[in-house]
Image (tube, rainbow, N blue to C red; front, side):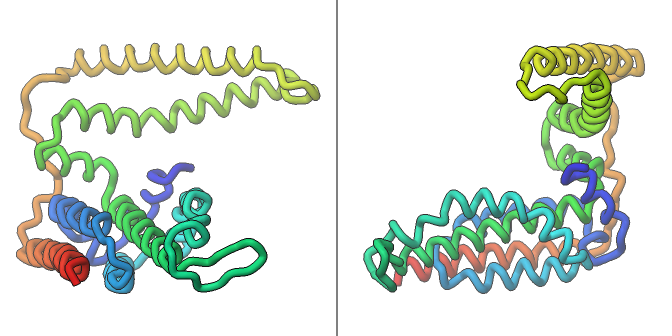
Length: 257
């Protein structure tokens, strides 16, 4: 089960972030992501982590889902930046056995890791507190072209069907003895990929014809389905926006010192 499908388990919960109007949530989280991505000073690591911790507690989500989502991307990131403490910078903290630990590299590693955790956690909070369809509708109401929204929704919908088809075809291959031989045979794998590609193309043609018969493409009013007018939604957006601006201002001020 993928990230989106597992995150859908938590979208029906009740919390301040779940009840927040999706359009304000999208704009606020996007502003906060931009602020996190532009932080360049290690002294802002604690404010970043404090902000994301407060938002995560507001969502009332278990810590286990955060660990599950960050585990594998975190390993990839670690593999890319693990050498930084030993190659970046001039201030030596420790030296021995042919290795030199440098202060600037350690700080860079901490900053990159903090930004990664903060941005990924924001993305998780967005997916785990907002139904995916509502998220796409909100993006469309904010000006995203309808073609992009429709393509994303259809991709999301039929990825699970293609996954089930792939699983069925793999089971059929195993029942016919494929995979029991010692040598890897590329012929059946190529046939499996080709068959899956043809089936997905034929299914896309059928879906498009069915949509055209039902009036797809005609002008119609599109609602987000979440017309909430409470002023607290705007207050939350303003608070997030001020936090993002505060981080950017502090980053600029610290860089000028």
